[in-house]
Structure formats: C-alpha cells, structure tokens
Length: 175
Image 1 (tube, rainbow, N blue to C red):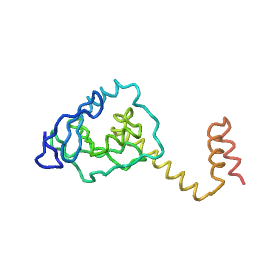
Image 2 (image 1 turned 135 degrees about the horizontal axis):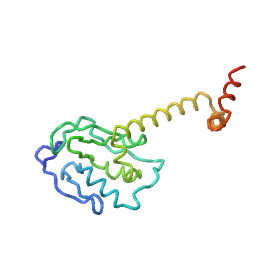
Image 3 (image 1 turned 90 degrees about the vertical axis):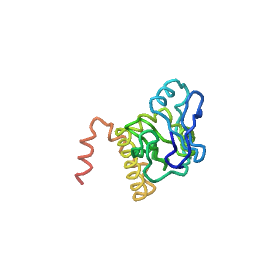
C-alpha cells in the first residue's frame, strides 16, 4: 500500500500500541488501521477507558478529503469528541481508519480509545453533534443570564425529575 498523502512512499507495518499493528508512512507518520483489528485490540484491553481530561490538545489535521490507501475511494471525516478539533478519516468500503501524525496519541491521551468504534458511526456522530449543540446553548444562556445561571440550571434539573414538573411549569408561566 502507498501513502495517499506522500506520493511514492510505501506504508510499513508498525506497532502503534502493544498488539496493535498499523500501516504507517515513514514520511508523514500517518497510519492506517483496519477497524476489525482496532475493535479486536480494544476488546483485549482492560485499561483503555479513561475519563476525558479537560485540557485535550488537537494536532495538525489534514483538512482535505483523503483517499483510502486500499481502494482509493474518498474517506469520510469523523469527529471523536467535541473537545478535539481533529477528525479521523474513515473508509466504509474497506473499514479502514486513517490517523494523521499525532492523532493516535491525541485520541489515546484524551481517553477515547474504548469508545472509538462507536464514535465512528452515523449514530455516534449524531450524538456528538447533539452534545455540541447542548453545550453551545448552555454557554449562550450562561453568558446571557450571568451569575445566577448555576442556580437556574440546578432548578431546571430538579424540575425535570420532579413528579409534578408539568404543573410547576404551568404555574410559573401563569404570571
């Protein structure tokens, strides 16, 4: 297989993590991994699920559409979390995922490996977009309301779980 970014460079097998083999370009350090191998490797791990740290760092991302190293079809870009700007390239025809230089380590450092296969699906992407929308709305109202926002947010959470929440909302809207 040839690197689709660096013309003329062959991909060589490397071990990204103990037991996980990828095809990596010696020039750009990008790596291609079969999703089947990645899923199998994740299933064998016992400690790959860690919480997402608050200070995740994005790395340089190839912004253009990338061709699959196996079939040369265009790959689809997928986010793995809203805190990282990087998007992984996935070929659904070959079930391959491409990691640009540093992306594998960024995903590992962010504690996202265990959930990665689920995030690289349409349902996973919808969930990420919805979480991003909710975070943007919350930030907007926090800025608009100001210092009392935390209290309002706590009240909203309490109201959602209260057995008479609908009646309380109706009462609040009366005046």
